[in-house]
Image (cartoon, rainbow, N blue to C red):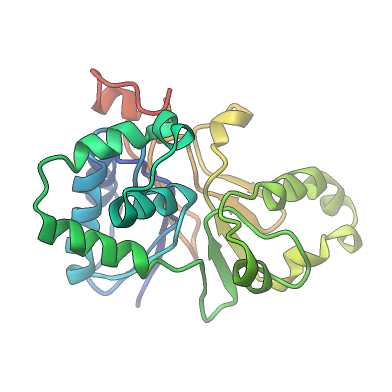
Length: 242
């Protein structure tokens, strides 16, 4: 029986990804769903994207687009960069691509071009990098303006969680659109946790791999999760996005 596995933000932490692959009991016919932000953090951004391309040959993989992936793609394709991106991991990402042959860079450009804004599986679970803002779902918003940096869905879920436990009639309408929602983007470290967090029917898989936290993978059905060592331990000479 196929299992689905969802993987949170990695931010160039290839060593963390390799530990997840070692520690989680992934079968060859399982599905891996990555929630975006593959780059901008640790020194292995380019190498991590190459590893994702390898994994795609071994497993059924679904790759969601993160806000950092958009900036990296714009730089690879057009040379576009800005000080905000450079300060938030872009400099390390540029360095990771320094010696990469142009043909391989082209493969990475094609990878970034086909990233999905979001994915809905057969059980009506939504996988999206950050969230969406209205009860119409994510599609209208992505059609107009990319919103893969929005945090309001997670904030809404956290605000309403305890109230919903007391009275299900208060369940936010936009969250009812899906059975469960899996997001990254907002580090659980902001809330004093380095493990996946749940609020209402939303699961936050960004466990701070860009900072002092860990990379995480979760079985979508059982919610059993596995984690890497803290990325600061795997890259002791680096600071990630700190």
